Length: 254
Image (tube, rainbow, N blue to C red; front, side, top):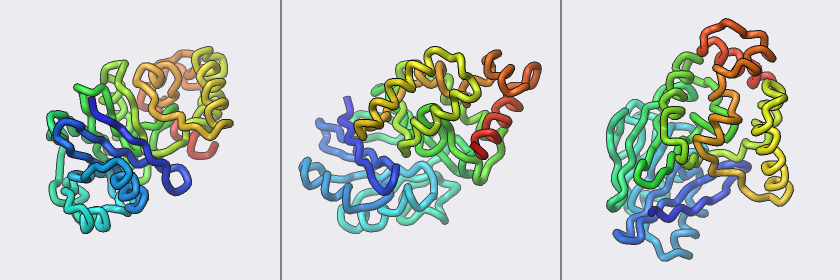
């Protein structure tokens, strides 16, 4: 299995270091800044070989150039964002594969938050690095894409195995859960999950990773078919994508 090191940076970002102990290769996912990555590499005695970017926003690519300069690593990022991501060496598209030692990630295109967003699914390790497309009990804002695009992107992620661990790029879970309770107040699994989340945050502990199974039960952006949710937001009889769009609109002003 991959060794995964979670680095909290900035206000609420997570950088992930993925290490293959057999080959010695290490990847950094969405390095917002370089110094915490360099410090962790030094502490662990790891060498950085790859950067995996999910999209072009500065709090995901800000450390690219310094890390590349100091380690000689290869930067992998969405091909369509090749002019917006610093240091890119290889552009990837939907269906491409990325290898780290003997571990393989499938690249899944997930436009919506940005036009070129991708995620990296290591099926053999049951892990998904999803940037700002999917959050624990939330999803990314629609900065460059449409609600329909984001809905289709999330359908791809909903179809992944239930045990898949979700490593998103921000610690937004508690706030997302507060919103989720307003649209599905009687969801017992959601209520129970929030009890755990509130305790974790009270102790300043991370709520990430989550799992696809947890999100199917509690994430309002995965639950457009829930009759309880539809009734609460007055969307009975509407198409799933319309329900999703309404939930996203409500979250934007929450």
